[in-house]
Length: 329
Image (cartoon, rainbow, N blue to C red; front, side, top):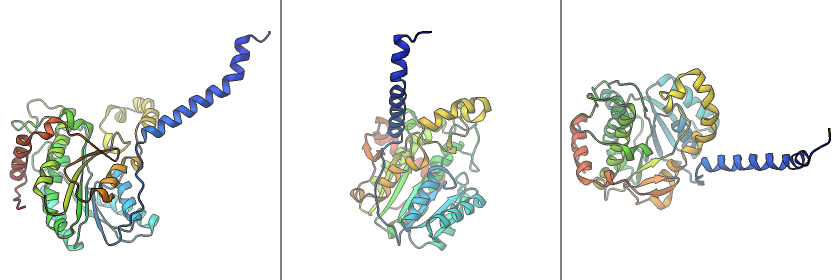
């Protein structure tokens, strides 16, 4: 059969078309990975504390800080797994100053015990990364009877941060990095039903917890003014971590197999997700910057709800009551 003009055209251009599609796909994948933060800053003599560091971004951040020579403490619920991660980090960067302590953010008693143990181990704290989180989980309560996402993502870190403020202040200049998400812009703080007992929706509860973190960041920044302790909020984007373990594409084998190639392609790797965390923790230009919202290593505008001073103040006062802590600036 004679070769048609189309066949001739296709056979000639096929390699070029494939190369163009492949090149575009690779370039788009690189774009999705986000802004890469370049810094060779060393942290010898500095102490870093990271919550939720047995996997994902917490583990990636812990490794990065350890590679810079910092003393790194992992605050983790699964202590046995955390010890394995500590050994892995120590071996990979030849830094023996990496430790793990048990801390269950769903238990205020555990948080108090952790802080007591941490202060015996470490006399300073220069960088606190409040990273641990749960997302879209079924309705469950913390040990202290708060909805799990609100209790772990927000209240646990609220209490932990308050209990560590004395260490942060005496180690100043020091920095606090809180983690939020795009979902915070959809959140509402329901003071009349904080546990969403009347109508629980996993997505709404997650958004509420992330909005609470944003409100806390801005309010704490005001409270800490003049102390040389700064606090900023990072949105890392959509990162492929265990945070999504309750999502439908993680819980059904067939759906998981179908979606995982898209997840791999569209989601950031943990190593990419920590770039804005590193920017917030290390960049010299942020030495006196506090109360900001950071995405892709740059400042973004807060949504109107976060700017609402009445909501911020009310959440602050209620959170002090819920966690039974006092605050003296």
